[in-house]
Image (cartoon, helix red, strand yellow):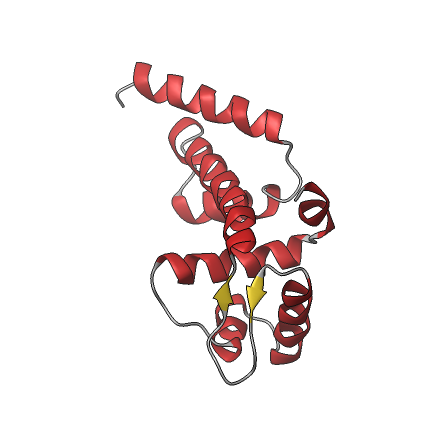
Length: 133
């Protein structure tokens, strides 16, 4: 699993995260919808989905909705978790508005180490328990 995780580009992580969010919301997602959601071309979506299929993270053909595999869910949960830990830190500790916090979390989630994420999560948890503002 570690080698698969390292082989995903930040772009592929964004695709996988969007597919995972649709899965969590029980929303059928097709390639064209994914292109609109991520503001990319259909060709880019097709290429990315083919890569995710080859890594066995999703199941997809152009006539059906995209489905995420068990391995895809595991990997997407890690990405999704990083995003929300960072977003919470930016909003609750740094008092950054939600839109800016989310935008920056999306950029940073791809490069930050698990060690730092864990320390940020722990700090945010302690900070929010001691402050009530």
